[in-house]
Image (cartoon, rainbow, N blue to C red; front, side):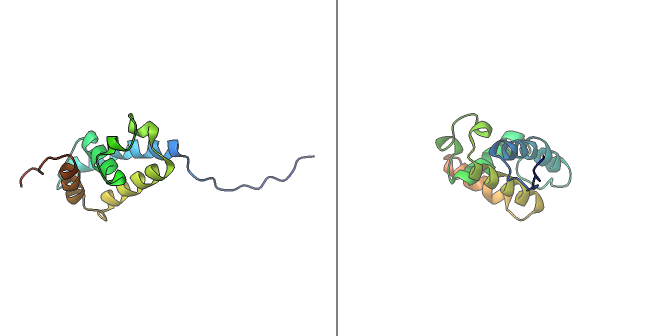
Length: 113
């Protein structure tokens, strides 16, 4: 006799969220930067990744996460990274400010300042 199985939603795994983060930073955000979000200060995937991970870590990401970052994100870091990407895309997070802060953490002056 089969037991009744209750279907429940499962929480996303860290790897699933990391994969979403990679799609957002490698495909979605660069494409938006070329089209509807041409005012963004960066265009390249690695720049979006730097900005998002630095913000998630509160400093230079590789001081906090082993390389490669997408394989070593904690669940919380992956959740925060995806949420921040989505907020940037929606215009709810200031990409220019996040980029400037990332550059400060790295000892580089933002371009144009």
